[in-house]
Image 1 (tube, one colour):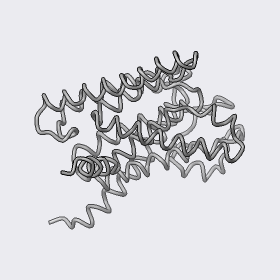
Image 2: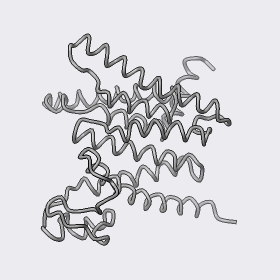
Image 3: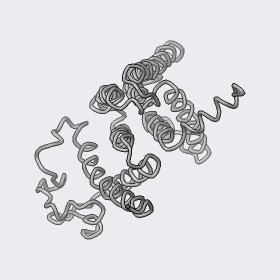
Image 4: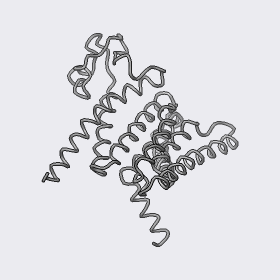
Length: 272
C-alpha cells in the first residue's frame, strides 16, 4: 500500500514542475495571442534579435537564472515577469492539487487558472481580454461540466450542465447590465465586453454562486487597491488598472476555498 504522505509530497512536486512548464507556455500565449501570432509555430524566439531559443535556454525559471536574465545571443534583458508567471502558475497548480488531490477537479481547475493567468496579464498589457480565453473558457466550462458533473456538486449530467448554463448567463448578464447602466449614467463605457465574457466563462465553471462571490471579492479587492493607490498619490494608475485581473483573483479565491466561506455565509444568514 502506498504511503498517503508520500503520495501527497509526490503530487505536490509533480504539480509544481508541471505548473512551471505550463507557465512557460502561458508566457508564449500572453505574448503572441494579442499580437495575432500562432501559439504553436514558430518555436520560441528572442523578441530582440529574433533568434530561436534553444531548449536548454527555455527551462522554466532555471534558464532565466543561468542566463542572468539576458538573451544568450544579443544580450537583451529578459523581463523578470517571465519567471514570475512560471512560478505563479506552479504555485497555483500546487494549491489546486493540495485542495482537490487525485480527483478530476484538479486538472479542470488547473485548466481554468491557466486561462485566468493569460487573461490577467494580457489585460494588464493591452486592456483587452482575448476571446480565446473568454469565449474558449465558456465552451470549456460547459463541456467539462457535462463530462464531470461533480464540478457543480451534483452526480448527473443534466443538472450540472444546467448550473453551468445558468452560471454563464448570470455572469455575462450581470456585468452586461452594469455596462449598459454605467454607459447611460456616466455617458462613457463603464465596463468592457471582455470583462462580461470573462465572467460568463467563470460562471460556466463555477455556477451562479461562484459568479456572485467573484463579483463581491473583485469589488472589495478593487476598492482596497484603488484607495491604496489614491493614498499613495497614484490617481493616474488607478484609472488605468483593468478589471479583468480582479475578476480572475476572485475566481481563484473561490476555487481555493472561497466556496466554503460562501457556504458558511449562506448558512449564517439563513440560519440553517
